[in-house]
Each structure stands twice: as structure tokens, then as C-alpha cells.
Length: 139
Image (cartoon, rainbow, N blue to C red; front, side):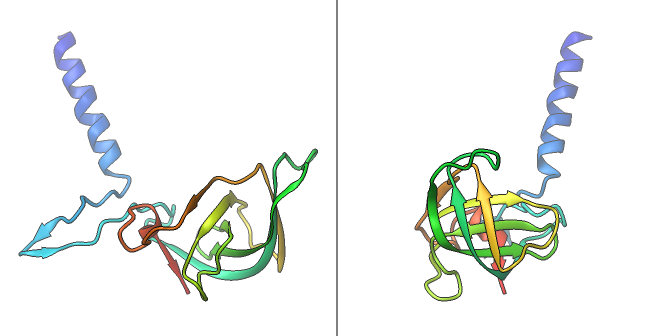
């Protein structure tokens, strides 16, 4: 009985993970390689990013922001879930993300955005082959 519960738990966990929209890498369907990306937008699709202006990323929280770690960065926002991406690179010019921070703000942002909590990472690779960044489209 205990072994059956463990197996059932593993199967349910696998189904739960699979339902979050991860498409297998290079899934073959009739001999055609399918793109691999992580469905990261709660809308169930890719993030639909549009330009929102410029921003500054601060090292600390809003009540004690500390120094700016990235000033005059490029800000885009998903029109579906309102995720904000502040990045070193301009996706419409260079196509480079560079150092970045994200923020789940829940509403549209203005022409200048302040983001707190520091940088979340950096990415200088090919967005088309990276599973996370392939889940973003810039319009």
C-alpha cells in the first residue's frame, strides 16, 4: 500500500511538472525539430514584451535602496502578465539582454521605472537556443 502511494505521488508530481508548459527539447514530430522554450507567462504562452522606457535598478529594497547597480537601463514589459524586464541591452537595437532584473509588478509601468533588490543575472547568449529566453518575444 505504501509503495503504491509513492508511485502514485511520483506520477502525479511528474504530471504536475509537465502541465507547466515545458516543451521537450527538439521534440521530433514527423521529422521536424520543434522549438524548445519554457512557457513562463501565466497567460500560457510566451511573454509578449513591449518597450516601456528606461529605469534604474537599486541594490537594496525600496525602504533602503542603496546604490544604483544599473542606471538608465532599458525597460520592457509583458502586456499579458505585466512582468517587467530591466536590462542592460536594448532588445530592439542590439538584441542583447546583458545584466538584468525582473519584477512582477501586476500593472503597467510608466516611462521611468525603479526596480529594487539588485540584479537577477546576466545573459549574453543566443536567445533563440536558450529555453528561458525563448519564452520571450519583443514587439
